[in-house]
Length: 108
Image (tube, rainbow, N blue to C red):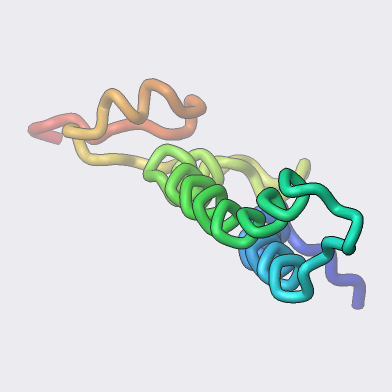
């Protein structure tokens, strides 16, 4: 059985791995005795900055628009895209998404 991870799974793993690698680099102090203060300062900031970057990335990736866009994609080339119906108050979001995402109409 071949298992190919989805793009969302890969991005989720990257959001976990990036801060971990930054923390390891900081913990091991990948600087040498000859390294200048800028190198030391950069490596000291790698861990904390990677957490900030990943937090921002997660906010964008977990936004309602991003989730709906991912849900609106067809599973494969042989499967039609799913029909997604959002409530009327999300009409602005539905207008930004593919045509298979619509809103309900009051009274129907």
